[in-house]
Length: 159
Image 1 (spheres, rainbow, N blue to C red):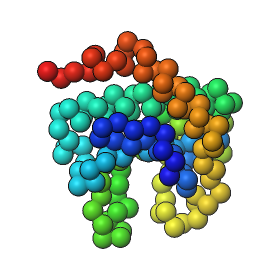
Image 2 (image 1 turned 90 degrees about the vertical axis):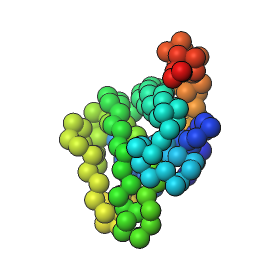
Image 3 (image 1 turned 30 degrees about the horizontal axis):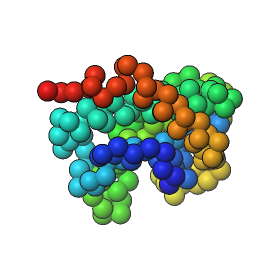
Image 4 (image 1 turned 120 degrees about the vertical axis):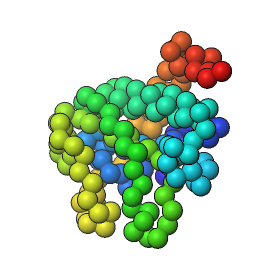
């Protein structure tokens, strides 16, 4: 995994073995630092607000960055999953996959739903991860978005 951004409670990273290939729109994951948190119902109100804000910022950054990189992303899908942990007798932890959806996608055709067969099925074997330039542009877009009034921390208080 490659670190893209970090907050008090969450880590944003790219997947080295993505569920959506780069040219299909890419795959970013936001995971909770406290892995005892199994799903969103276990979040504090403050953490829930932090996560919602973060998904909005990262989703917008992913779309803008990949468009600038020549990948025609038309939508971002947000998936709160984690079922595969049970296959290994492990406890799941909260993480959200963000899938860019490109209009000319090859493996994950848009507007169909993202297809998620078993990890060991071979389906993902030829998928390309986001590259250094993509990640650099996503980081740049995150920094630009954080300056917008809409994403200022003071707008997201829950007191």
